[in-house]
Image 1: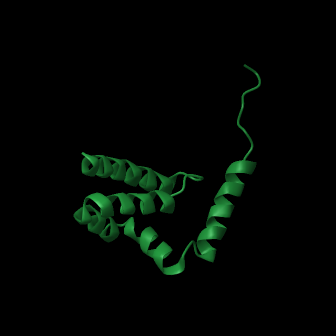
Image 2: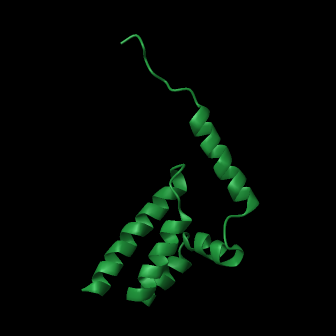
Image 3: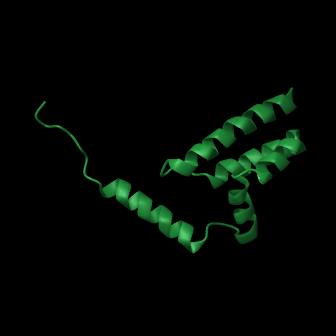
Length: 94
């Protein structure tokens, strides 16, 4: 039962990690690291699939460097800055 729970949670967390690629402010790497750990405990085949998929580059990058590169950090800060300072498009006439 625990194995199936780990696989299910791993799949859910992979989905959140994939969503984090396109949604600013939603982390990608922590979700993918958690999914990799869950798959490691429950299904080595799924862990290998995750590492071989296009999402695996985030995990491998974290394993190699221990975190984000300077370019990734600058991009994240830039995206968050734009989101925070874009004027709120309210219609005050309604």
